[in-house]
Image 1 (tube, rainbow, N blue to C red):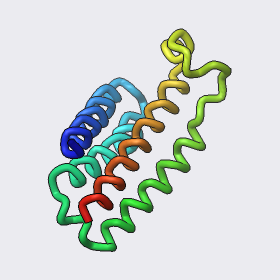
Image 2: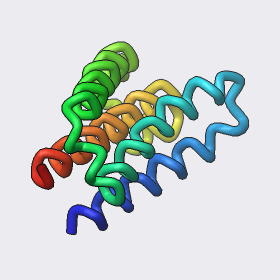
Image 3: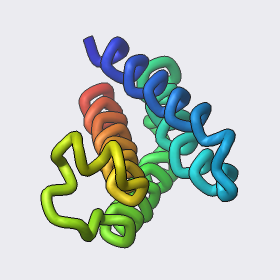
Length: 116
C-alpha cells in the first residue's frame, strides 16, 4: 500500500515538474517538484537507504526547507482554495503545488519510519 502511495505521489511530482516547461523560472520549480519525487521514489523502492541516519537527516532537512517554501509561497488572496480563484491566480497554484510537495515529503518520511 505504501509503495503505491509513494509511486502515485512520485508520478504526481514528476507531472508537476513536467508542466513547468513554459515558465520563465521553470528550473526553480522543477527542483521544487523533483526533490520530493526523488524522496517518494526512494521511500517506495529503495527502503534500505533509510536505514542510515544520515539519509533520514537529509529527508528531515528537505521537509524543513519545503515547509519554509510553503510559508513563503502561501497564497495571499482570499479564498485561494476555490477553483475559480486558483484557475486565475498562478500564485495560488504555486502555493498549493508546494503544499502537495510537502505532503509528498511527509508521506516519504512516514514510510521511512514505518519500514525501519
